Length: 251
Image (cartoon, rainbow, N blue to C red; front, side, top):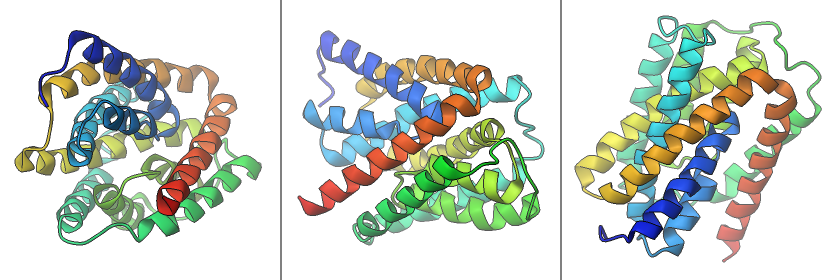
């Protein structure tokens, strides 16, 4: 499976670029990359593992950009990052022993609710903080991190909603903080996929380049367009993920 032709690698580079741009704004980049990898003959487990490799590059690129732009203070995020990493690690370990298929039924409902929240919520420019950052870390960071390691679809949307509704962040700032925790959970899951030997490195490195560039483009759009762009993209991604999971359940 490591013998990919140059035209396939180039195609996947551009696929990852588009996915990285969308993922930086609203998450859900795997909706693009995983189906395309499966369509070129990559086995499902290798597709999931390789997707974590290339998406880690995208989430790191976006996180680095947001930190440099002053949207995220990494010192304040140490505890949330630690709980997210631990949660993702536990989820990745557990999914190797039990079937995550039951989530295919529950997650579409949650994603539709999130889409509804972002579609009709009037205040996405910042509001009242309801819990402390430490409490957020021990609850949302741990649980959503666990979910990302265990299943994954919609992680970015779950984090974004938590930051907006519980910490009172603006949607743009929530998106920036989401990418930092997304990167953390991706790296935790990636470590175990590396140990399992499922990653296709040639394909993964080609896609990493595209992800890095696409994530940088998406991050800039978050800062320049803000809520006007992020809100419709999150709603669209949530609904598409819901439909995909429902079709997957029916097939």
